[in-house]
Amino acid sequence: MPRTIYILNGPNLNLLGRRQPEIYGHDTLDDVARRCAETGAGQGLETLLLQSNHEGQIVDWIHEARDAAAGIIINPGALTHYSIAVLDALNTFDGPVIEVHISQVHKRESFRHHSYVSLRADAVMAGFGVHGYVLAMRHMGHLLAG
Ligand code: DHK
Image 1 (cartoon, rainbow, N blue to C red):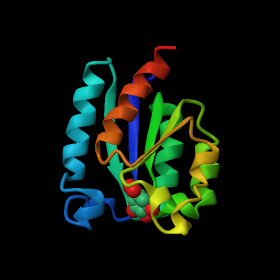
Image 2: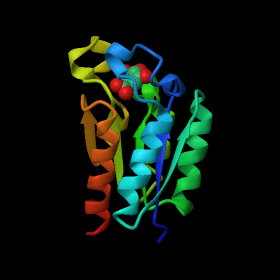
Image 3: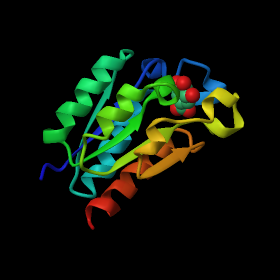
């Protein structure tokens, strides 16, 4: 079994740290990658953080993860709320899936309250800022330890 965790990020998350910092904070996706790698190192896990603004690329990475990853942490961005393709792809993956939202989506517009990805996710983090990725990594280690 591979010991790599795929950390997938959807549309607009490339702008993390510069985009609406009052909502998403000042840390960048590189900061997230570094913190997740540090957390994973303490758990015997490697991490691969990827970001795309394109739904099909996210689907392709989930397919790749079927053979390459022990677990998936995913912040699908807006795809959360409308992408049945991302849900279907995640349903082909056998390992643990943790959904992360930086913001507390349930405090925001009603269209952000529904998540297709939650139909597959084993755990959901929302409102912890970028620390949610680190918490998700810790929980991933716990899940994979059995
Ligand atoms: C990120 C986005 O880009 C939004 O489309 C989601 C999520 C919320 C987040 O909080 O990380 O609605």
